[in-house]
Amino acid sequence: MEIHVVHYLVVSTVMLFCGIYGFFTRKNLLAILISVELMLNATNINFAVFNRYLFPDQLEGHFFSMFGIAVAAAETAVAIAIIINVYRSMKQILTDDITDLKG
Image (tube, rainbow, N blue to C red; front, side, top):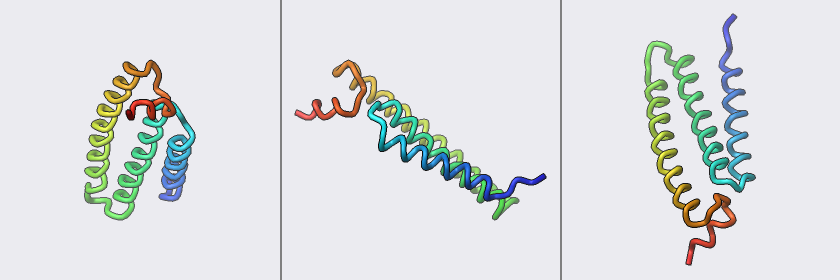
């Protein structure tokens, strides 16, 4: 039994919209970071799926996915460093309190 491209796209779309919803509704910086990771992983699924169905003998989609994973890892490292610095100065990681750091 073969899984059709539509099933992969449904999973990817659900992941993308869960990430968008989490990004706009959460106030915790770690939850926002997880939402961004969900969105990036949804795009990686799309790269791999479209590569598999459009160009099955080539690996461009997989290389794009690997590059996306590397970018996500770098983005996570920078975001965690920022979150740790915010926590050290504010003692919490809510987005409402970050506006206090401006002045």
